[in-house]
Image (cartoon, rainbow, N blue to C red; front, side, top):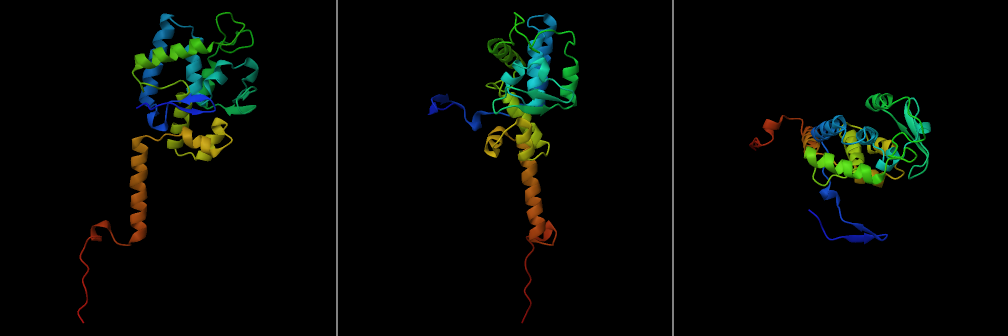
Length: 222
């Protein structure tokens, strides 16, 4: 559902948390298949789908990966120089390291994902339209944006049991409130949490089995 635009700092805010769907593992699989087909068909440069994959595997902002420099890639992390909140380190998991190792080691120039000229990074326009096409072909969340891959990274990290503090550190957030807006839990996770909460509370309320909860109380005769 869309609602009327409100204004904050001069920018139109059209999407609410209620409109953001969590990109599931199945969604990611469908998008990955679409990107592989596009890359093999030669319809897009191989750098474009690789950029999207690295965004999802690191939780970085699209612009951070699109403008990634070779000098920022280290053995186990990315050392982002021009981050939105200042320089920061992004630790790489195994899948992200494997993707890093698959990058051509003979590449020249400053940019990891160069544009057509090779002297500048991949353009925002090229990455945006590739994502729109891959998303629509895969049939995932209808209004999912590239930036929602960052939300997906945060959400699945939280659903894997990590605290909001850890999620915030991974994303480079300075405020916990920002991280709260990024984490969207799916119904299965919330249902499991509700079951566990109810079970825990029930055990604390009474030492008796659940079947005895509604048993009639027998009063002693005086």
